[in-house]
Length: 257
Image (cartoon, rainbow, N blue to C red; front, top):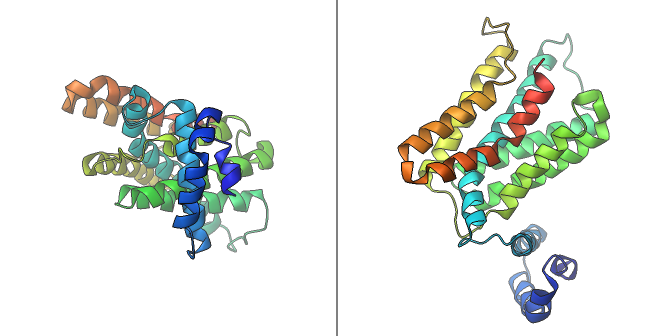
């Protein structure tokens, strides 16, 4: 597996450091569980991806992705949480709770759960493990959405936006993990989106107007508040919000009128 991962590196770097990377990988995974081997390989793949894109902790792109990553995690948690809420409310209103058939819809559902749990885990302290779980879930969600076709939303826009979110989480420099304040802000944003829309699905809120743009409005408001709080980083904060919005754009596209 490590040989295939090495091909993700630029050729020059692979020739210079490939043997060293393989040796370090084999030493680190000797006698460990399969999940730990997979995690190490994922870390190497992420490093290769960042080198391909020129994304490092010292580059402008790397700093932008690092600033956007917690917001992307919050957006992913809210987006997939709404997908789960919509299913649960619809299923609970049925005379008999519908079974989960082995189809692409069920894969989308379980992928949403993986993304939501991973994103919450990342925002509550275990950033590395949670972010990678969210990446895996987003890729699975995108694949299942393509397989579902137009039956469950847009088969082009939604997968592309999910993959963009996964790319941001995977490419963000690991040596620039988000601080506690950024993680709390992203969590508050996610809650401000998920709670009222879920209440709307459940019929608790007497609202009949369009709510497809609500997540984008919340994200924009949080971005403006963050930019005003840290005016020296206003440009970076604003750009990070733009980078974080693809999944909410997909939501507005599929849920709006």
